[in-house]
Amino acid sequence: MSTPAISIQNLTKIYPIPFKREKVTAVQDLSLTVEPGQVYGLLGPNGSGKSTTMKIVLGLVSPTSGRTEIFGRDSTTVESREDVGFLPENPYFYKYLTGQETLRFYGKLCGLSSAKIRDRSKELLKLVGLENAADRRLAGYSKGMLQRIGLAQAMIQEPRLLVLDEPTAGVDPAGSREIRDLILDFKKRGITVLLCSHLLEQVQEICDRVGILNHGALIREGTLDELISIQDQTELILENATPELLADIHALLGKSSARLIEERKPQKTLERYFLDVTGTPQP
Amino acid sequence: MTATPTATQHKAFSLARISAIASNTLLELIRLKVFYFMLLFALLIIGSSFFTSKFTFQEQFQVLKDVSLGAMSIFTWLLAVLATAMLLPKDIEDRTLYTILAKPVPRFEYLLGKFIGVLLLLFIAISLMSAVFVVVLYTREQDAIANAARYVPDNAYSDQVKSIHAACFNSNLVPGIAIIYLKSALCAALTLLLSTFASSWIFTIITSVVVYLIGHIQPIARQAYLDSATTSHLTKVFLAVVALIIPDLTSLSLVDDIVVGNAIPMLIFVKTAGLGVTYICVYFFVGYLVFSGKEL
Image 1 (tube, rainbow over the protein chains, first blue to last red):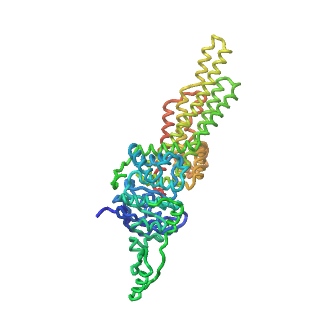
Image 2 (image 1 turned 120 degrees about the horizontal axis):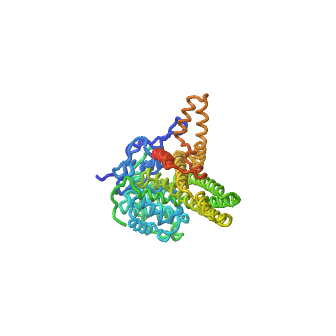
Image 3 (image 1 turned 180 degrees about the vertical axis):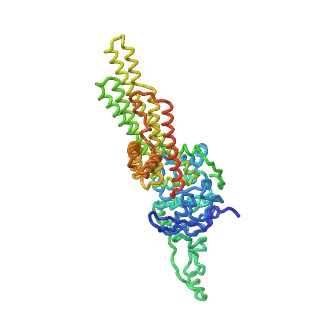
């Protein structure tokens, strides 16, 4: 069996409140595993412990108890970060650097050679669609462009794990879709993704597995099929069905014990409709 | 794009990472337009040299050195405090710190890179100020020599020129400026330490200024209290602790000796520099200990 990309065992994080005897439990006895190549969605309302869990995985916060590992390496150690790329929520990079310089800076932090940084920057700027903005200062980047350069910096050292905190926060639907497609592209390349998002529809579209946190505890976990499929119901979507065919189906239904709950025209999502009317190219 | 990525080897210590952070910090600070200080400095010393034109050349050089070295000391201190106080809070607020520390960058290297960036800025600043100072001093020296050529009899001219040279440039200037640099570096290290646990950069700046003032008045206070027969044992212990935590900043200055042209023995210079370097290392190390345990 392969080493999990992320392994969290009995993780608890308690924050003391300054000048008070009270303490806040941000994460309580959390255990979960993210397998290599998976896109894992960590969901939960505000204050549920998502960000704390993520920060512990990244070694930015130390756990009160429990253990977290990244590809078998203790995540409190610096070397575990060799395998990780991180995009925080609403990131602000150094505004005086250009897109190219930003990638060079992060590449140097990862110990890459100048030639490797040059190659990777070119490749990543193309991947995130910022080739034409490579020499522009980040101060002039839109929100969506900042998120994309953020993704590129997270990918600079070819990490095996990407941790993304609200990667589409504040981004317009077209930008949001582009980021979604990039995540799917990373998945195709075998990169594991841990995604925190409030956009449940997007999580549903791209995640293989989902964990739901509430009050610091994991209350549900599983594949999307396991979690949201209604096992005793079946959905048929027919194209070009004639009235006669529908009448036959109704007749068959009448002879069986099955109950028709709803019959309706399928709808596009509002996002797809928006992208259609604004003429945004779709994959 | 390459195939599925594989595990990467980690380098425990990397000068390349430190230099990337240091050069980026320097760029960040330069872009804050901190070099407006230099303009003020140049105006101050050029202006002061005009006001002293009626003095003898010895007095002129003395005032020029006094004003210039004093201004250098204050400007580099201000620069050290203001530049350092905002570094960490800004990176935390903008979350750039997260993206840096989520890379394989030890916190020690991050902090050291930031500190070296400030040291480079201070070095550039003091070099520029020294250059302006030397140019103004040289100009005044040439004026004094020109005056000597006009008013001093021929038989006394060469002696007069020798005295002008002796009063103008002397070898004390270099160690004096080096100590000013070390003092500003010490204030930067102290400010960096404060910013590792302070909740805001305003608090950091205010505390750093207060510590600077304590550092200047504590030798006087210490002497007054220790000489007094009524001082309690507890007060003496407190003063000893303050003296240990905050160095006597008046001892980190050789300006008075330079101004009057006294020679600075090598031993005094080495001891003063050693004191400065020791405090810089201690402040930086304590700052690192606080920062390494900081929850981000």
